[in-house]
Length: 256
Image 1 (cartoon, rainbow, N blue to C red):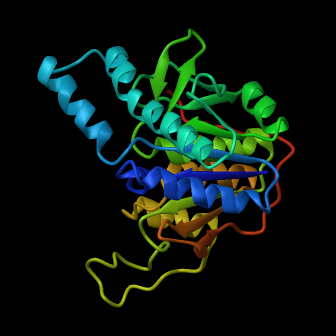
Image 2 (cartoon, rainbow, N blue to C red):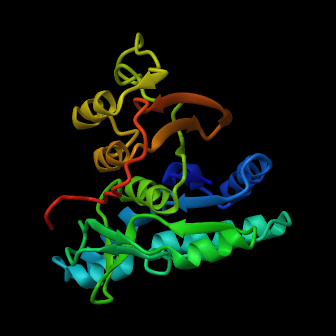
């Protein structure tokens, strides 16, 4: 079982979906079951937020979540189509359809439970499961979003719920660097990091992985691997510390 996560920079254009499909198909040669979590294309979320504010200067948060969750739904359906075009069966799911249960805090919800029954059914049929990141559903049935970086958290939460050994993140960077490579020419890729080291870097401004996803991975012993979207076979940084999966599954503990 493997969870693969593709960020918005990996799906900047429609042609990107075909490249992602090729990466997934290649990984499927060695992984029997694959779940893919994907973000909205490029700056789609920012564009939707701008649109909302053009209609209402302070839009109702429920309606804003309904609007911006559209971005990921576009991505999951296009990726399923790209895989189908290459002869690989895939089924796409929104956050709610995949069983990501959150609190009721619109725009910055926390995951409180996972019930990925439909995802398991697809995997057991030998199909690829594609899940919209960044979104879930409250126990009252309301669509929620997880805030910036929420897709990373979606991927780790699915790995925990499904018993996946690792999450592979495909980014527009080679890995996690010792400093911002755009500002420091001496910055070097850090090939391995403990969860605590990665978390400290994230809190200090490194944007490769969201802090909440690292915390959730540490609580449950899920390994995180950073790959370059342009060099998918190359692992840039691996985050973990040899911890084993706890018998007590944990999701996000932050109070909503």
